[in-house]
Length: 279
Ligand SMILES: Nc1ncnc2c1ncn2[C@@H]1O[C@H](COP(=O)(O)OP(=O)(O)O)[C@@H](O)[C@H]1O
Ligand SMILES: [Mg+2]
Image 1 (tube, rainbow, N blue to C red):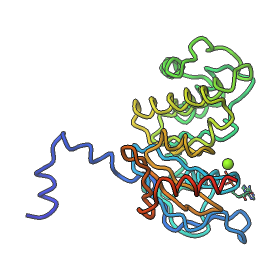
Image 2 (tube, helix red, strand yellow):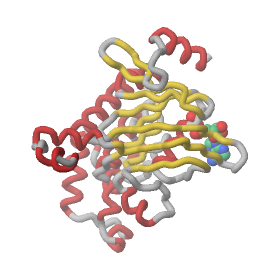
Image 3 (cartoon, rainbow, N blue to C red):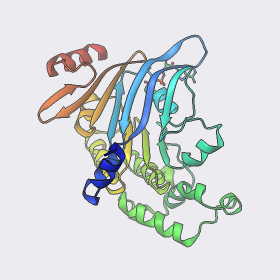
Image 4 (cartoon, rainbow, N blue to C red):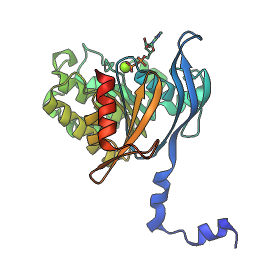
């Protein structure tokens, strides 16, 4: 019996879960530079499975934002290979641009339009789906408005539908940015330090909201954090970046923190290492 016929004969709906283990992001020995001289990312190799909540943590300037820009094609690597859903990310490539609507990217400054309403900011997420003319005049079909209202509810902003976005609190603005990303119907959510400037309680609320949305829509999330504890609390995997290199890749298994990169670092060593980096 060939492998193929064996696989197909044992295939049933009950093992469809195997589909969710496919790699959605693959980086092999990736190097990145802004000036073709100094590398701000070096030797980055990582693999992110579909459905994972993946965190990237590291000090300021370690290369976290650059890593997200490589994933959404805003930047291309100097060396090495990246595949996002089997495609080479590059915003100048038309084929990739089409699939870009499947990537909900929330930049560190959130990228909201301040002087328009909450609902109008959310509707921006639908722009790639509507015709060029309608999109130019921002005329949205009723079904998209209904969808935006559902998402408005989901992120807990139903009372703020027509409020101008600049009037919102920091936590509420983040809810709008999440809602706009969800409006894209993304398969991948990228968020750059979305909770860094928030107090602990609000940060947890926003992280819980993302975790719920991730489950509901079966998303893969790649989130940049400053705080390793936050990463470990919410993520399946945490990549620690130091001076452009991935020095650890951690995961929580039961009550243990496991280093998947070397496989033999103790929890104490990991936390000490991280604390040393921060000081
Ligand atoms: N547009 C840019 N031009 C030149 N250098 C940059 C640019 N953006 C970031 N860098 C440099 O690249 C390095 C990594 O930056 P970044 O990815 O923003 O780090 P992080 O997000 O971890 O703070 C830093 O040394 C930073 O100064
Ligand atoms: Mg950054």
